[in-house]
Image (cartoon, rainbow, N blue to C red; front, side, top):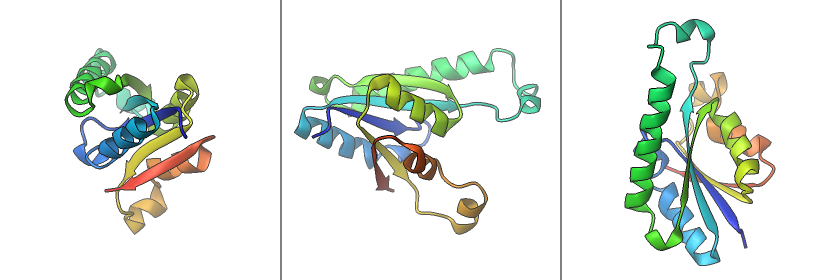
Length: 143
């Protein structure tokens, strides 16, 4: 049904993949889909914040995130599935939306915590932002 599945995770937050990764693997295996696993290293948010980090923070964060993602995919995704790992840097939901086009995804799988009413009201969730803006179907796995 779906040819290319994009699974979005935060390698530093097991809750973001403990339930969603097995679901994405199951779907990709059942449909014979290609699986792309994406993790986004969030940017600083404000330029003034950048001054509090070491000069090479961005490069180190991307390298560390990429290494952690490769290890996770190797350990948790069956080798026969041949999943591709992608690490990006920037605003999380924007990078997910860019990745949808970049990999040609026709389904996004992502986890979402049960909503906290105050946090949801003030800033919303990444899953909500992706669902509202995605050009393709999004499967939100509650964790």
